[in-house]
Length: 109
Image 1 (cartoon, rainbow, N blue to C red):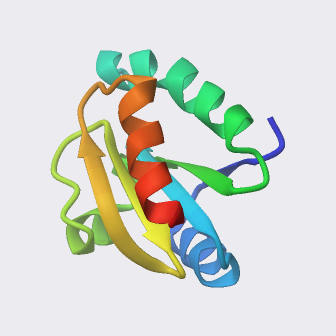
Image 2 (cartoon, rainbow, N blue to C red):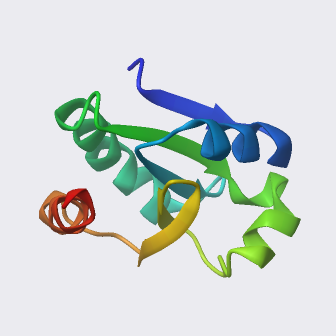
C-alpha cells in the first residue's frame, strides 16, 4: 500500500506532517494491542479508498513518547487527523470505516 508511511521517530513524522498539504491520518498503535490489530484492515481499506487524498501514517506510540504526550495520545489505538500540518480531529478506540469516512468528508470541505 503505497500511501501508507511508517513513522519510526518524531523527526520522520514531523517531516511528513510539514511536507504534506492535504489530509494526513496518523494512527498511533502499540505492539500487542488487540484493538490496534483490529483497526489495521479498516485503516488499510480507508487508505486505499482515499488514495491521492489522504496519507496514512502508522506510528508506534511506544517509540514516540514526547510526541504522544504533546498530542494527548493516552491510549491506543488513537487516530489523529492533520490538515496543513495541524491536528484537526481524532478518533479513539476501535471505529468503523463509516466513522472515518464521515470525518474525512467533513475535513475535505
